[in-house]
Length: 290
Image (cartoon, rainbow, N blue to C red; front, side):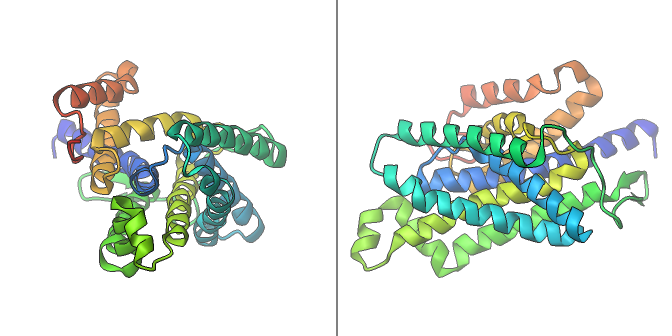
């Protein structure tokens, strides 16, 4: 295969791997916004917390797969406690209250991370069994990045099936349209909304564990990726799960190919893309017009 074509296909897979991390984060962000109407500024902090919880489990057990399973569970349970103890108390107030609350929560979580785990970061460490590259026939590609692509695919399909094929998903979708009517029908939608918030932040925690072997682990790792995740959600369409998936993969590909062609503007490129999408399609790629 021609060397240029090999480089392009390799960048394609790299973009899909990067985009898969954005998908895991953005799906949770879109789920929380679409169902609860909350712009969760603490999402990046939950992402970092998941990475550190996973690091702790890995350090004590030596089992990456156990860390991958337990970290999202711990983060999700914390998210459920936050929703029940804090979010419900301000549900009837102005949207700015949720913005302030989640922003303050983000600062608090990052400081807790620094107190518990310290301010020094940890370098990327690829788990055993996924360290060797895989021969794709035209080039070798890191096995761990292929795993991240597969993980994002499985998780997003599971979330979509959960929302579209289960009673919980039916109630959640109904509650987004008319919570009062759902309550009048005898359904306690508050419990389902709390579980939705927990699921959203659990996905952020999962993304944190998956990102650690690629970018390393440090207390502020959620700050930059949170901004990029909001770009993904805006590009895909606010509140649209399929939009979050499409936006995440598109942003990953844009960063990857821009890095190949013009590295200096690789991070700027996603904001240029967002500006173009907002200019020609304000509701996002798969969002619905107001």
